[in-house]
Image 1 (cartoon, rainbow, N blue to C red):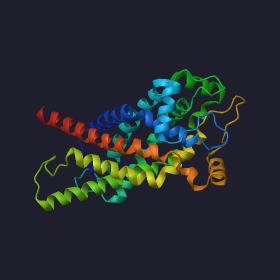
Image 2 (image 1 turned 45 degrees about the vertical axis):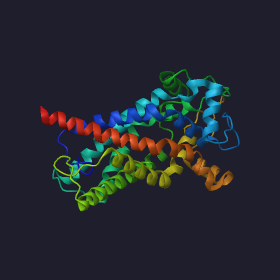
Image 3 (image 1 turned 90 degrees about the horizontal axis):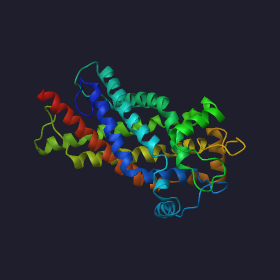
Image 4 (image 1 turned 30 degrees about the horizontal axis):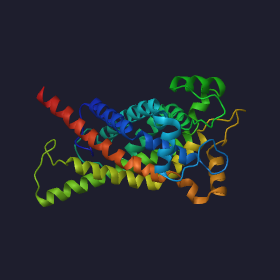
Length: 313
């Protein structure tokens, strides 16, 4: 594939490798995702969530009061969403890069990487927003809730459609589209760091081959993946907080906590200041930095496996 390798002829390989990477990531780090979501929406005023002192305390409290079920709340939509999202993302991303490179193996500029990643992110956001909305609501269910809890993914979908209509499934789509910049930044930084490390290796005269060129090892993929994720998180995290808050379930009277994204911005800025937009960032970093490493390590190695199998056939 273009910047994550050479332009690929079999685009399904990118999608399959991305899907496997996404599945691997979410199954290993889901409890931290639950903690992150609960911190994000807890504005310190009206909340159905327990008060957690820090990430460790949150995990201990959830495990003690809700058990393993609480730590893995929303696991099914998380697995589904992550697997589908990463699969589609890598597929659309590489399709876009192939189109912009016009089939040549020439390296694309950072601008084209950014455009390709943004294009892929927008398509994935549009297709998967309902899954993420359900995941968020399931993760926020606690014994403190007064409304009838969703029994699972399908019950949540049915209930939302019945009580709120299909438009409710797209609550948070605005900040979701803004979060396209997250993936665009992450992939652009990943591409540029990858090229820089390969160039450095060439300068050192280290010889290893990957599709006829230099190859990076597993540690390289892990470090570059985590570094690119860190840059994206620091620049775009407030959008995640806004989306999580606007996607909360309405109260028993059918009134949402926040009417829209702008309402979230105004209320958060007024009552919490800048810190409010970074609630849960510690658990987010603890989850997503290793998650990014795992994702890119699995992705690159699965893609290499596919290519070796194709070559041997």
